[in-house]
Length: 248
Image (tube, rainbow, N blue to C red; front, side, top):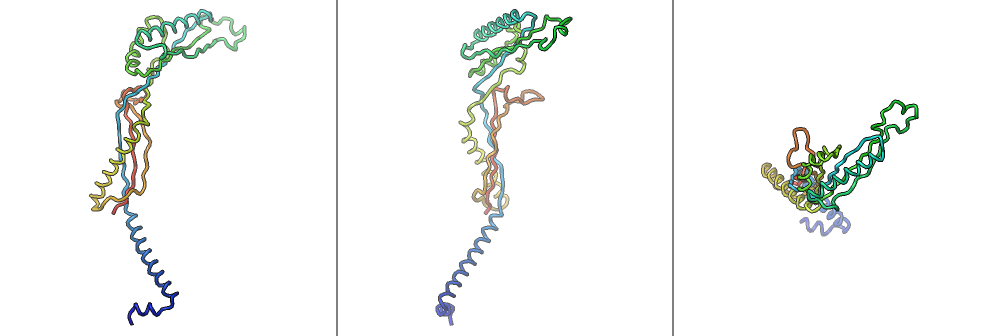
């Protein structure tokens, strides 16, 4: 008797069970093949870099005055502020880009008793510290003028904390993110295709992908011991994407 006739003569319930068993067997075979293929993956990294230029500069110019007469010290500080602002305006900045910093006053004898003050030199009792801040989009102008601080010092202004120089900021990261992610993904795909070729396989679909953090560094090395991105006008933005592909 043929198999088809045997199946025809079977009770309906047994036909259903047989059909279910065949389908289930096919599922496990297909699933086994899929799982076998899924185990074949390759993980690659794609790098994208872009050179950018800072669009904002922040420059703090700080100075102080010391003396025994608080009013006289404050008067000297006011003079320093006027000279500094005039110096900046003469070199191309407008008043809207310049603002005064907070004033701090230190009393050397604060908390001293009258007995403790006796015999102490009161000539440097008061220290007033302040300065001006420049915030400008003219980063090249800030860089140029920051190299002329000697002209201000020669006017008698005691610059105390300008050694760090201006800070340069790049605010356009959101404008280039998509383009850089696309480039990183393209590079990762190229690396995956090369690996697949070397392994006598083909690159399949993406199993997982991870976008790395965007990092900003100085484009050029500042010196032998430091890579201070904040002091660099020219910067380099970098992102690495990690992608796992199926191999087929």
